[in-house]
Amino acid sequence: MRTPLLVLAVFAMVCGAPMAVGGIVLMTLAATFAAAQPRSSPTACAIAPSHPVTGSTVARRIDMWIASTVPASPLIGLGQAMVDGAAGSGLDPRLLAAIALQETRLGTLGAGPAVHNPFGLGPGLVFGSWTSAISLAVHTLEVMHAGGAQTIDGIAAHWAPIGAGNDPTDLNANWAGGVAAGYVQLGGNAAASVFGPQSTGQLSPVTPCSPTMTAADGRRAR
Image (cartoon, rainbow, N blue to C red):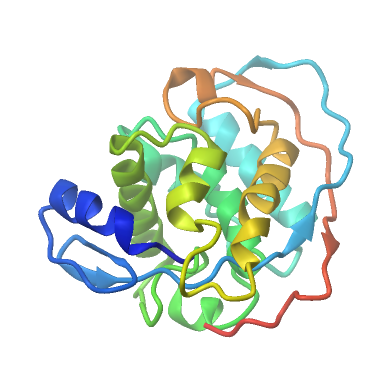
């Protein structure tokens, strides 16, 4: 994730935390976000008619999708942790899984597994558990939402802005599309808000998908 200086002051004021050049400081922790890396290209997944769901259904669906997309992912079984972590924030927890796919291929690339950092938070952030990383990712997204970000494209403008000075090869241009592809595979609407009851009120059944890897996969270490 790469963040321009233009948005840093806004986020720092919202969080009530100091600011570091090139990144956002959240929860008294100086955190800059590393470059968004293209992980996958959209694949066609059959989406059945939507139906009402509960939080536990979303958790199971996240776990099913992680297991079918990256069978070796250490995040399998953490669907409920994502649901619980997003509880009360209005955030659709499926977005967390989609970001993890884009940033670290669901915790299997770079330093993600060793530092429990599947979302690319940092650089240099080490978490004692996956749930700690989930908590900071949710908080980061809440801050962006408070600044007006509603959709994946809106979040991308802060999480991985195109043209950021610390993204000379324009990797950020792939972030929104990669996250959207995963979110759609999870049954989400990539054009709709990822906050509020409308984001998880209807959920389409997941069809196992294996995103097509790009040549750039595995290039970035964390």
